[in-house]
Structures are given as structure tokens and as C-alpha cells.
Length: 197
Image (cartoon, rainbow, N blue to C red; front, side):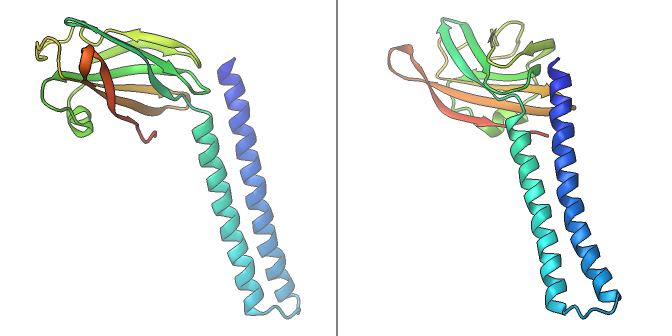
């Protein structure tokens, strides 16, 4: 049902964009026809028509970008806990479309973790059709089945990069890095969203 509604919304958006572009093209066509029919059209009028067409195209692209950012999943951190070696992180889909988890990049150690180091490392786990619907939370234990991580108890830094797909074969990611502070509290020191594609 969500795919049907999404398809209908994107079809409407495409139709609106096409209509706006068609109006701009018609305006340029009418100006050209008038000039060819013996009416005197100045170069300034043609330049103004061309400028209007370019502005219309820019507005159409901006509208499409705004809609793309509205109708997508937005993954974010919901809850987080560390008990000895056991780390549990909950993520929530704050967006309008479901997200299908495809992979996670995870690290924990006493040296500072950076965005770059997380993004360059190979995935530490992959998911098989794990879907998080809008406003739904999903608990993940990133340590399960992961080999080769530091066994620091408890680690000073924990970094998680969650990768996901959404309708129309688009991909995005959400990253978070936490640092241990007083009383074993892990505070967020960096958080980011992927660029989406």
C-alpha cells in the first residue's frame, strides 16, 4: 500500500514538473513564432523569455529535491546502552517511507573514531530484509557475530554507521559516534546522514 501511495505521489510530482516545464517551453515557442510572423521582438524580450525558462527549471529542480527529502526514511538514534561487553542500540525511522537495512559498520576502541574511519571500513554485518517502517524502532546488538574488534571493557569510543535502502532503489546511511563520559554515560560527539542516492 505504501508503494502504491508513494508511486502515486511521485507520479503527481513528475506531472507537475512536466507541466511547469511545458509552460516555459510554450512561452519561448510563442515568442519565437511571434518573431517569425513578422512581429518585431527585441533581443531583450528573447533574453527575458530565456531567463524565465531557466528560472522555471531551477524551481522545478528545487521542488523535486524538497519532495525527495520529505518522502524518504530518516534513520536516527533512539536508545543506547552498554553493559560490560554488551552493546545495544535502538534506531528509529523518523521519515515517511520504510527503510530496508542492508549493512552496518561498527567499531569500538579507546582511540578516537572518526566518520572517515567508519566509512572506509568494510561492513561488519549485513541484514537480510530487515525493514523499519516510519515511526518504528529496531534494536540492534552490533557486537553479535563480529570478530576482530577491540575487547576493551568498556570502550572509550563507539561508532556505528547504519546503511539502508528505500523505494526506487535509493540508498542512504546514518552514522553516530559516542564517547564515554562520567558514570558510564555515552554522549553523542558526532552524528551525520549520508547523501542519499
